[in-house]
Image 1 (tube, helix red, strand yellow):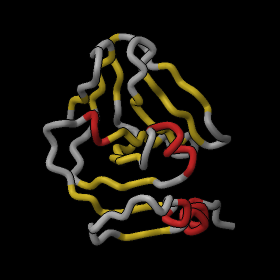
Image 2 (tube, one colour):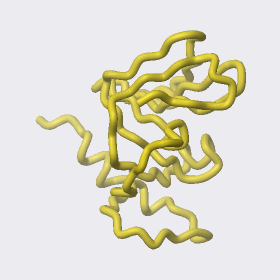
Image 3 (spheres, one colour):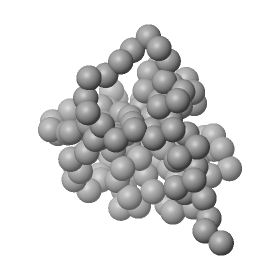
Image 4 (cartoon, one colour):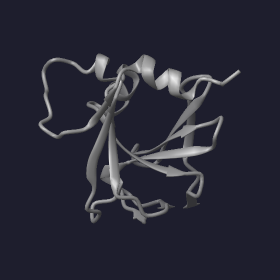
Length: 132
C-alpha cells in the first residue's frame, strides 16, 4: 500500500492490510484530535523522499510526522519495530474496523456502533508485558 497525504514530500510504502483498530488513549486523542484509526503494518514499512520527523513519546514508542505539512505518519513501537499507520493515509483501501483499545479512556461524547473487540489500557499493557 502506498500512503498519500497533504504535501506528498515523503512516500510511505507498507504491506496490504484489511483491519483497522481504534486507539482511544489520551495521547493518541491529543495527537490526532480524536481516536487514532490505526493500521498495524509490522516492520516492513519504508519511507523515501524527505525524512520523517520522529518524536519519542514514551519509553517504548515514537511518533512520526512530515516536517513540511505536519501530517501524522506513524506510531512506532520500538521493542518489536512495529509501525502503526493512520488509516486516513490509505484513502483507497476498504478497511474493516476490528478492534478498539484503551476503551476505558474513550470520552463519553462519541459512541461507535461497530461490533469490535474491545480492550482496556491495562489489558493492552498486560498483553505486551515481558513474560518471566
